[in-house]
Amino acid sequence: MRRILRCTIPACLLLVLGILWCCVNPVPEREGLEALLPDEVGGWMKHGAAQGYAGDDLFTYINGGAEIYREFGFEEVVVQDYRTDQGGAISLEVYKMTGPESAYGIFTFKRSADGRAMDYHGAEAQLEDYYLNLWKGSYLVTLTGFDEEDTTIQGLQDLARSLAFRITEIGEAPGLVSLLPDKDKILGSVRYFNGPLALFNSHSFAREDVFSLDQGVRGDYTGGESLFIFAYETPEGAEAAFRGAEEFFASAPDHAVDRGPGEDCFRMQGPREGFFQLKRVQDFILVLKELGPSESPSPLLVEAQARIDGKRSSRPAGPGIHAPWF
Image 1: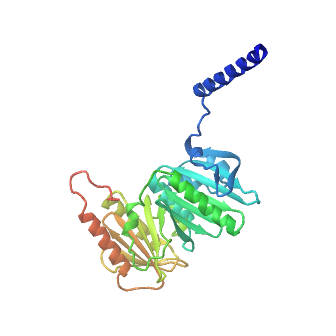
Image 2: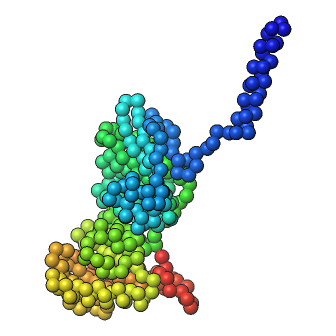
């Protein structure tokens, strides 16, 4: 009996000391973006360690494509691979942007009008082939499968659903988007710009920043038109940008410019871009790309101007209130 006691008492003490040590020194929890990563979802398990990049380190991760993220407002990204026992592979990227508008903008840059819209816990998402992009709050989630097997496509959706649930922040699309007419707008065609680089990647009006762009939006329509709306801090800023663009295109040898139809409006024909109507409305510039020349204002421009006027009339008036309502 004494031998048994001598053996068991130290063991009990070690057990107690171990419990106390765990209480005083708990296993550290994951922080930041890594805390959003699930360990396992539907048979898809983490494979290897997560990799993180912040600030200018993004250029190390994305060779040649980091500038557009920085223009929208990039903060950091975490990258994690997932595998199945059967050999399936998916790469998961979670980007933290400076705010919901920044995340929405890069989401519109990455999605396609040909993708399938998905609905996950208040997030906006799109599945195309073996890619899935998701926007919620200040976060962009990009999932890439390495094949088009049904199990991989299902894995993309399962992981996206899990991330959408884990991201508790919510955010709305920029108010500028609501100025685009809804009738005949192609689902998934909206692009939001937070600088000239994003606009250049959507449509190249020139090799320079002709419109002195800060914020803008584009929507494509079933009739073949594309409507751009550029926003400025003041009507004076919009007027200066509008006149500057008119002078630029009028002096370009491969462009033809005519005044009208109506006030603060001119028509333009480019060598490859087709036909355009450009109009200034308060602190906005509207640019409509058409399939052919038109002598009258486009219904899309008329509807967009009505939306601007309607929003403007609902804004509070007072000294010092100059910034656009959005």
